[in-house]
Image (cartoon, rainbow, N blue to C red):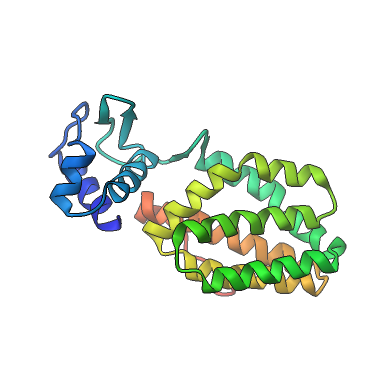
Length: 223
């Protein structure tokens, strides 16, 4: 998928496909790259998230820009929408979870990070990732936080899948998730907030690197 998406992205940026042009059909692209149509669909979703194309049911996929947008979309929400909400919700939520979590919360979080460490299928990992963040919200003891994360769950999953496939984020996310769980288990609000802050910053940096490599921030050494 990464190779197909990279090839199509370069072709669009070179002008091989101009704005307004229709891309070849999924079947044609599958034959050209010798991959399944599901791989082609994932690549086309990646192009759309980057703002390079738009797909119209029954008509095909059309080029809408010759370069990626600054603020890609994942389902109904943009990356900026997600980052703003996550900074203001998930960071304090991690702190509350450290203070209020129960033994069942810790058991489930430990189980989830272990499963993510062992999981090799991207789709399954993304589902576990969503559940991980929802579990932390629920561990905060405030059901409203859980509802907020549930509302953006699909968009977060799309973004996570995108970052794993194009940014190689999965292994590092596993490390960051364990740091968050360790801080919550220790009951340290400060450490949990710091761990979630670092995690979200790395996610944002990874997305920026994909969309606009020269604009990526350099993480602090402690991250």
